[in-house]
Image 1 (cartoon, helix red, strand yellow):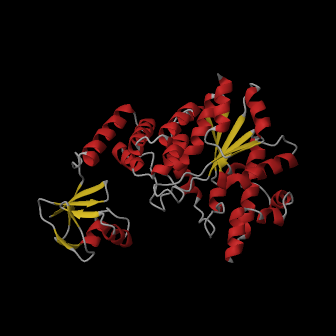
Image 2 (tube, rainbow, N blue to C red):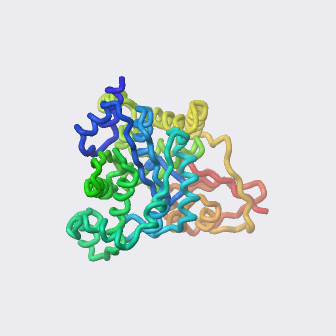
Image 3 (tube, rainbow, N blue to C red):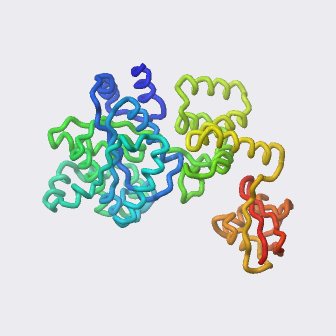
Length: 397
């Protein structure tokens, strides 16, 4: 049975395994491996993209291995180079530690955090002397550092690379030395840092850790990485109805990928789903199954059933939601865009203009044709709708 679980772990929802044959042998040996996942808790709210690697961690926990969650209360103050064209803005240690508390609460939806070793890398990185840092740096060349994809992108764009960004992989690699990690997990954007751990472990006379990387999950737009800054995410603490509705909005081409990376579907399940998809099954039906499974995973079966019933009532039968939030405004007459922003139905005025231009805004069930429209509120309330899921009853005092 464990052999099947090991095969699934190594082959489902993974991008690269280093070194696969060696790692598989360790997993089958019966040895309890020290499994490291490093997190710089720069934010406090997790989404499905964050949970892709946590699901792999859960598989190793179920196989009986020792899980170490390393919170970067030191590295997070420095900031890992991002895939964007600029350095990440650092956080304070207090902010990072507060975020870590929320992080643990949320990953507890999937893994048993009581059986996890939690460590903080400021404990060993803060005491390092400048001599120690120079010694760590001597294990790498500038040419090796510049091989990192994100640095290459910046060079081509003529954008700067700060010296401290070269130091981040050294710190993450040294974490693996201190923890004597047998395994480290991470996203594909972390491959360079994970490999740095192998280099430094060799330098310190340790057996180099094995590495497993997971894909970066696309967001609701089907293109960009899932993230709050892009407003294309599904938060794991979202209400069931919101979570269900967002899953239903993903492009059809992501259905199988989401099943693989965000649910407990087995390799056999995935094969069957692909056969259904390829044979012309209605994508809506597959998405409803996907949405049920995701909501049940982070809430429960009852919540998943209720969210599905709500979705069917609202979207298939064109009914309004059972519960629509209400807000009382301090004046009666509003420009439509200002009203949408004030009511938090759109993230910005430009978002409001985009939604109106796309025909996605209604007032009392009538489509808004112009960004110049004025809305007069009353005590009974005016029904605002943005897109397929956002509703608000706007009332005057």
